Image (cartoon, rainbow, N blue to C red; front, side, top):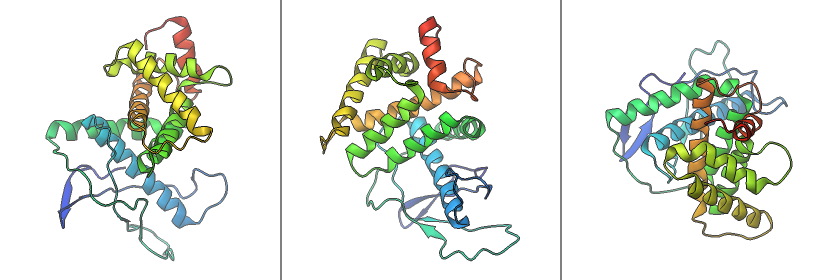
Length: 256
């Protein structure tokens, strides 16, 4: 579980420090192949840091990703000493950043989002994959990487199986995401534009500066929240493929 005072921040040398307390199961890892315990711990920590960033950015309605410094960790309550080579790692080589004011309402909102995600993510492979790609998008150094990772995550939630993907990406995404403010028509067109840009990048266009990258990640973050709301409302089942169920709801004309 996350540290109960999740968003209590300390300030050290002008930097905000977020503390997270987490438990993990060494037998579980994203890969089916055995991994060193240290790698499993780092993977677990990274997942939870991504979740904290997602909850904060969603509560703030912020598109620019929060950046990371060095992640340090300690193992507490471990019965058998583990010969770890180090207790820190770094996923980004970025300096600078933007400060945000967090009031109690935003903190409470982020806590609720964390609790919801911690409950539902382990029960849905599709959600787990979507969070993974959201995290990779937030870490991407290039707009190209940010957009591609975000679109892959959205595809996992919106497009089941082979077929004409651009149409379904826009249609299903608009049905799912218009709750966040855009009209269905505007959302559909933006999503189709993002998907076309993804196709250009996949075929060699370097896309050095892409305004679509941050919007793609924002849509993925919102899609994750919308899917969790649908699971809690009993409209889709977490144990089944999410994209297939979204398509079925759209075809039936059911409200999403």
